[in-house]
Image 1 (spheres, one colour):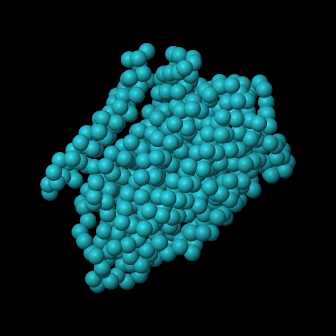
Image 2: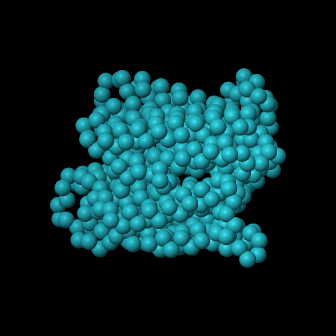
Image 3: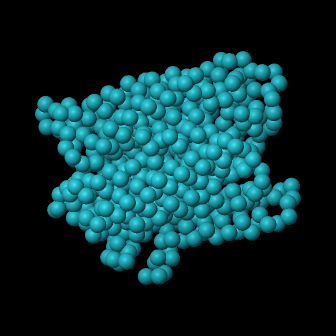
Length: 505
């Protein structure tokens, strides 16, 4: 049993060892190649961890679901690992100059938390994984100690995160108090026979408040704009990508694996108590407020922050389908969104280095000074807007069609979730305005002849930005390359759950 546990946690252990090696390497006296060596060690540890995941398929569940390894978990681990490693590359060309080894080690520690989070089906481990993910992110947000905006962002992030953690823990404790179990699979079996209890509903509401903070959904979103703007760009990229994938996957597991029988109904004319009505309202509020607030922003990081809030609303809409197809659509879209936003932050990081800021004016005439970079930014903005033939379009189409399918599943004469679908489509059209504003500055506004603080960027950052742009285009043209593995993994998780070797801790 100990050997099996060690094998299942080997990817996380490799990352932990890599983080320690990076910290030790940071103590070596500075040389001209010091930062490159530290980055190489970080990437090597990540690649070894990913190789272990891909070459050791398994379908086991230990300690009542505390540690799970199945095709869905493997796919999610590879996704968050890849996103985190790209964020490390972006850090190499960012404003983070001091204590670079410690910075990359914190990214690795946060990645370990994400991997533990997606690899569990237990309430206690969900909380532990979320905190292991969040605590390094608080430090990464305030890493620029001489920047007042970075310090302010870290303080807000930490304070709001602490409150949300309290809500989540109290909600999970109520769920445990009512049901007496922490395993999501056992929770599903109990709620199937006992029905809905008022204390259970209270626990679900408080847990959703905690999860809402992690995915930046309204009304738990107020930290996002300041954090995205004040944090180092690579930190904001990690928050917007890897942690988003982990957060939405565990939220989908929590609701659809563990609490499917307490969903209720969010149909316009057939409301029933459960988590679906609350989730639908949060989704609608996120779409409306995120898109409207983005219209008045003049900083690209803040635009991406409010865009992230709106995108969370679209993903929550996918979860309202409350079935395997809905989960597949959400997982597909959150991976596509994470790759797209990570690429956009990569462009922002390069522009910050070249022109000294991330306001819209700093992007003026980018097509003349860096046509390749401008093309990539155009791809990312068009994909976020959901315009064909890019991956963002197919992702939103899949999300909306899943919600539309749930309309048809309601009895004849009901409007079902059509109201939520209409809200999402209307405000997705609104979002076109601020994405086009960014493109206007990139492609139409004249360029300064001598931009302030203009510097050469690192080729590695530009290369990864280009690869992400190609991935967005490729997944738009061939979405089944990602969608089929996701659907197969979810079917396997639902129909053939991981083999439980130890029923209880």
